[in-house]
Amino acid sequence: MTQPDTPLKRTPLHAAHVRLGARMIPFGGWDMPVQYAGIVEEHRTVRSAVGCFDVSHMGEFEFRGPDALRVLQRLTTNDVATLEIGQVQYSLLCYEDGGIVDDLTLYRLTDDHYMMTVNASNIDKDWAWVSRHLDGRVEARNVSAETGLIAVQGPHAARLVGRLSDVDVPAIGYYHFRQGRVAGVPGIVSRTGYTGEDGFELYLPATGTEEVWERLLAEGKGDGVAPIGLGARDTLRLEMKYALYGNDIDETTNPLEAGLGWVVKPAKGPFLGKDAIERVRAAGPSRRLVGFEMVERAVARHGYPILHGGAAVGVVTSGSYGPSVDRYIGIGYVPAALAAVGSAIAVEVRGRGQAARVVKTPFHPPRVKR
Amino acid sequence: MATYPAELRYTREHEWAKIEGKRARVGITHYAQDQLGDVVFVELPKVGARVTQMQAFGVVESVKAVSDLFAPLSGVVIEVNEELTKQPERVNRDPYGTGWLVVVELANPAEAEKLMGASQYEEFLKTAGGH
Picture 1 (cartoon, one colour):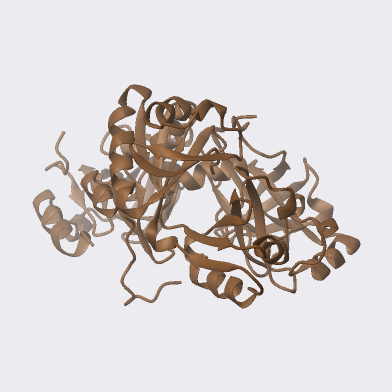
Picture 2 (spheres, chains in turn purple, cyan):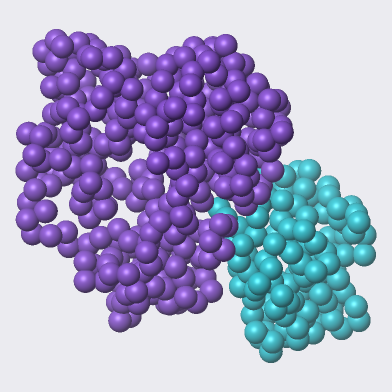
C-alpha cells in the first residue's frame, strides 16, 4: 500500500508511544503502535477496565453551509435528515457501481455544520471523492492534520472521562456527543467506539492531544487504564464483527452483502450508488459476510479460501484468536445459501480444509451504553 | 533464567536445541517469542515424523503472525508437547521450559556443529537477527 521510500506519517502522540515502549509498525502509511504490553493483555484490559487508543491517524472533514445537508445526502448512504444536532451516524460512501469508497461516522455539530470521520488509509481518496461531488453553498475542509483523536474504551471509561471533562459525560447517549473540555483542552466527547464496550472518542486539536493522553493515563491508574495498540483494536472489533475497510469491505464489495444494509436508506432520495445497490437488493446478494468459528484447531486469516464440498466458494476477510471468546474466529464472504447460522464450511489453511461453522454474531456480547 | 541459556544450541531461525546424548529437546528462543507476541496456536508433527535440519517441521501463530518452525537437527520426533494445544501461551511464558515443542531422536548428532552457541547467537541477534 505504501511505497517503501515514502516516509511514514506520525500522529501527535508518536513521541508518547515511543516513550511508553510501544512496538511501532507501518499501518496505512502511518507509524503506529501495534502493542505495548501485549495484544491479549491489552484486549482484556479494554473488556475489564479501560484502555486508551491513539486513532489520530483517522481523517476528519468538515462541511458547512446551507447546502451541507443536501450534499451529504447525495454522498452518503444513510439518511442525514434524521441526524440531530449532537448525534452521530454510521454511514458509507459508495461508488456509482455500489462498491464502497469508505465507511465513516457523521457528526452534526450545528444546524448546517457537519463533521465526517474516515479511515486513515483512505483520507486522500475520500477527500478527492468528496471534493468531486461538492456543489452549491457548502464549504468543505479536510481538517485531518490538525485533529487528534483518542478512543477511551471499556467499562471504566465513563468514570475516567467524567472526572477529566467539564461536560455531563453520564448524560451522553450512545452515538451522541457533546462539545466541551477534557483535561482543559477543548474538543468533542463522542460516545462511540470500535470495541463493543462503553466508551468515548475524543476529538481534540492536534496540539492538545498529548496533554489529554498523558492526563488520561495518569488519572486513570485507579481505573486500571492502559494504552492499547492497533493489535488489540483489531481483535476487539473482530469479536464484534465490525467491518474493517480494506479487509472486510472495499470497492469490490457492496453494502448489502457486507451486512451494512441497515445504513442504506433508499427512501431518502437519490444518492451515489443507490441504483446499483437497489439492483442488488432486488436480486438478493449472491454472497454474504458471515461470522464463523473454527471447529477444527486452526487459525483462519485474511485471504484464506472458504471451502464447501471441497471447492473454494468464498474467502476469509478477517480471522484470529478471539481472546474474550477463547476461540479461533473469523469473518468472510460465503454464498448466500451458506450464510445461515449453523452452516458447515471449511477454511483452507496451508493447503488443508479445516472444519468451521457459521455462527451468530457478534461473537462476544456488546456492552455499549443503551 | 538466562535470556539465552549457555547449555543450548541455537539456529538462525531462532529455535533452540538442548542436546542430551542422541536426543534433543527443541523450542523457540526468547527473541522469537518476543517478536511473535502472544502465541495463540502451535502446529507440531506427530510422534514418529521425520524432521530435517533447517527444514520446516511445524508452525507457530501469534495474534498477528504465522511463522514456520525450523528443525535445528534431523531425526525422528519421539515426544510432542501436547500441552501447547490448550496452553500455547506457555511458549511466551517459559520458552525454554514448559514451552518446549518436540523431542527428536537424532539421526546425525554431528549436525550440532552447524548450530550457534549462546554468545554466538546473541552476537547474531545484534547484527542480522535484530532486524
